[in-house]
Amino acid sequence: TSVRGSARFTDAHTLAVTLQDGTVQTVGFDQCLIATGAHPAIPPIEGLKDTPYWTSTEALAAAAIPPRLAVIGSSVVAVELAQAYARLGSQVTILARSTLLFREDPAIGITLSAAFADEGINVLAHTQASKISHADGVFTLHTHRGDIQAERLLVATGRAPNTRDLNLQVAGVKTDARGAIVVNDHLRSNVAHIYAAGDCTDQPQFVYVAAAGGTRAAINMLGGDAALDLSAMPAVVFTEPQVATLGLSEAAAHLRNIETDSRTLALDNVPRALANFDTRGFIKLVAEVGSGRLIGVQAVAAEAGELIQAAALAIHNRMTVQELADQLFPYLTMVEGLKLAAQTFTKDVAQLSCCAG
Image (tube, rainbow, N blue to C red; front, side, top):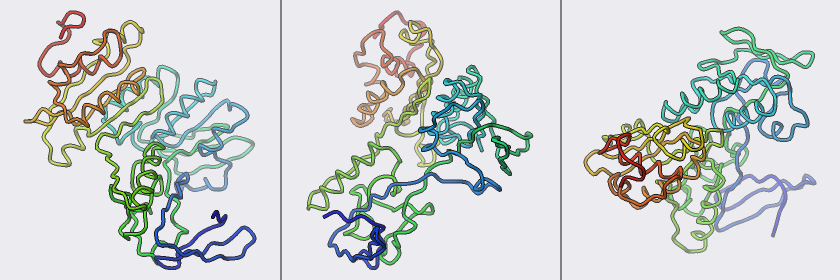
């Protein structure tokens, strides 16, 4: 049975649904799956709410390319759309509160910023707008660096879970500081018969994570036993060059008291990158000291998203960097860079001949 309306919990086994005609229908349940998604999070900048700013929704549906585009934000949506609009002809300025992709290894933001600068994208790191106004079709952003003007403004500062109106507290469902529903690896909340999946949870906000979570939640609600393992979850940012990450960065490993050994391979050591005349970027491997087990990969490269899954399989199967280095990789592929990066733990790859094992 499909019921269209806005639902609120009235207790741990009952929903009150306000239908489209304004009437309220009560729905009782034995088990519940919450999959309400998320919405763009808008920062509390003075004057912003009174302007016709864009979120990703409007940016992806725009009928015209603005001469100038200002972007507030520095994460995935911000950098992908910023580069897209720059290549479509806009003069783009990014205001980053910290640096580009600041939650990742610092080398990623540095490399991507350099690539953006080469394309004429103006990245203002450590810059925030204190006030925003809009008049005569032009936005004015006031910053400590001076005023920035643009015909369009994209606000891409993350997404917030759609949980505020669910009245979760009466059902006893716990959320984190962002309002995201806290779930375990079986997608179960702290209330045993209430599950959640997707962007309304505290799990990573990727469509493939949401899909996998929903599938496993359904299995578990029907008496099964399906866990979602995020220890080898690859993530890709579709800029050019692409950014692909997996597992733990050095900083994240150190927060878990894991001692690390790492190597970074510049792409001018990867034959395919040389053949493509595009050596922008790097491949970095993070290993656990002692065991030598691969625990993290960060890559900035053309088609980085195509090589990261091989690394995901290596981490999933608890391979060491030496075991990865001993694998056969086809010559003149970007994924061969993983083998070369693994070899740098014990060899100087610049001294090796082509395909040296």
